[in-house]
Amino acid sequence: MKKTLLIPFFVLSTVLLALTGCVNTQPATSAMEHSEFPEPQYMKARVLEIKDLIPEDPDQVAYFDMQIITVKVTGGKFDGQVITVEHIIDESSPYNIHIQPKDEVLLAAEIEGEQLVEAYIESHARDRQLKTLSVVSGI
Image (cartoon, rainbow, N blue to C red; front, side, top):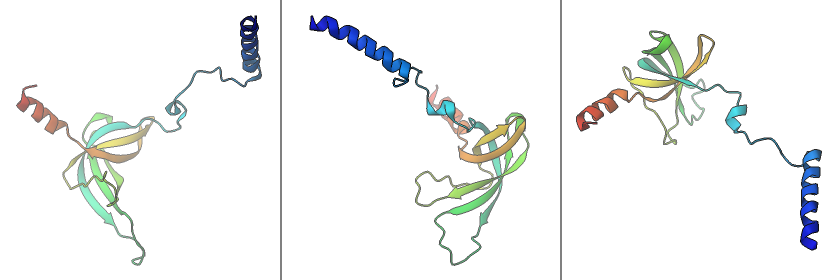
């Protein structure tokens, strides 16, 4: 007898909670679906010039080095375009990317419409090395 009374009680309480908004009836969504940041587009570029920025105040302690890097995009719809990107080197970070002139790099770019708004260096371009490795290993 007690079991038969409990089942309608649970059903009724669940319906009441759903109607009052205490239970989330919407499907779960990821944080990326609500993100205001667009997904970056990746493109290759060649480093043309590197300028180290020196702090204005020589007594100021710098925890990182900042560089202004001029690159030439070598693929995609922005092929041939020369842009400048800021690059930060934090010596305490294991994820530093040390860049030299003539290096090929992979840029992560923010594009609005048909215009390249901002870009940063994601990593060194490794496609040539991977192609060579696959040919040598016979893949």
